[in-house]
Amino acid sequence: MPDFGVNKIVDKLTHELLHFFNSFSSWESSVVRSSDLSVSEAHAIEILGQFGQMNMKGLAQKLGVTTGTTTVTVDRLEKKDYARRESTREDRRVNLINLTEKGCRAFDEHHKFHLALTEQMISVLAEEEIYQFLTILKKINSEIF
Amino acid sequence: MPDFGVNKIVDKLTHELLHFFNSFSSWESSVVRSSDLSVSEAHAIEILGQFGQMNMKGLAQKLGVTTGTTTVTVDRLEKKDYARRESTREDRRVNLINLTEKGCRAFDEHHKFHLALTEQMISVLAEEEIYQFLTILKKINSEIF
DNA sequence: TCATACAATTTGATTATCAAATTTAATATA
DNA sequence: TATATTAAATTTGATAATCAAATTGTATGA
Image 1 (tube, rainbow over the protein chains, first blue to last red):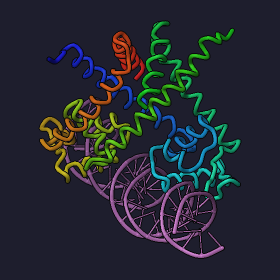
Image 2 (image 1 turned 180 degrees about the horizontal axis):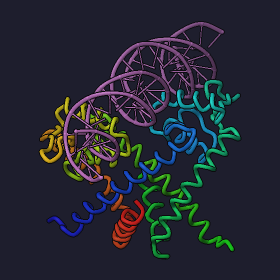
Image 3 (image 1 turned 120 degrees about the vertical axis):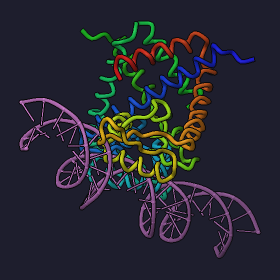
Image 4 (image 1 turned 135 degrees about the vertical axis):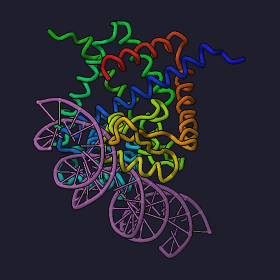
């Protein structure tokens, strides 16, 4: 027997999630377009800044693209001096990708925008909703994504 | 005088938001790649299915891209019979974009994935958190995005 | 009527992406 | 030890996505 109350909330939540995601997406690209970086370059810097150095495969996974695509992106980041490859002794097939100092600065710069957006979100929420939001996102991130 | 309690929660929330957004993003592209549609085509169908027919400019805005890009996307959707342009009598410059029957089916198909994802999210939340999440997203969407 | 504004398209270039093939290195096993 | 297998990264060849700027066709206000 269907529970219409629950079904309705699934629809509503889906709608709000889509709105949220699409808006976040446009916001992100407009922020990036105002910088020296392309969207995929910025995305890679964001991952590297957040998680620290990693190999091509890991970066590709985090970016959700193939390693071929990631090779191209990292090529460009190296050319522009935002990142560099470092080969490891343990396994000479592996390249560890690091942010350069310029890359770290770009990360901080970009991250400030994210912090500002979060502040904006917080400003429209009640005190307890802020903590609820954090709790909810943590649960979803750890158990689903 | 800085409030360290609040600053810390901004950082945490930003971190979780980024994780959430990036995961949602990869999820979306892997869902799309398993279909006949490209990412931008799917995105356009998603907007049209959600909001109904709209003109090129409106669609471009929702997609967060230029009208030139949108023209190309709609060209492809028309070629594949997912959407069609309809010119209006009131203003012959304007094209209203509609989903075809095939386009509507594709939207439903894709939307089912979104509903399933939302169900998954709901399944890890407590009853009251589901409503909190909806309330929070509504506030952010209406007041910020 | 005519200048201005506007919606959409086109143009020309760059960037993003994939799947598949290739290269190079590590590892297991016969 | 030789050799087959697996694995990381790159390259290749093709297509898709995107932008800014120029263009086209239409509306509208002075």
